Length: 123
Image (cartoon, rainbow, N blue to C red; front, side, top):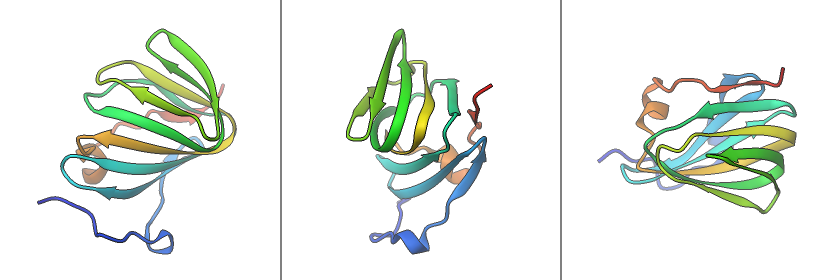
């Protein structure tokens, strides 16, 4: 079965630079679920995209403008977002921050390096 180690310690996990002021750290997974930390610099964006995974996102730090489908909302530390499968969504980092994303099932594209980058800087 594909799965991460049981204990994932911050000083032992690598950060993957995604470009545009965004980096990602995979914090645990099996075939059914995955948790990922995503750091954003101020002005960085997650361009509009969609995927077949269910996703919840918790704002651990910072302020973001999220667009999910036709809805737009300013969210900040302590807030969360639920994103249905296959719905177009994006985020603009208003204040440097950290998101905790949970996906179901696992984002295999994150593990095998085939994920399309949809991050960048505000223009």
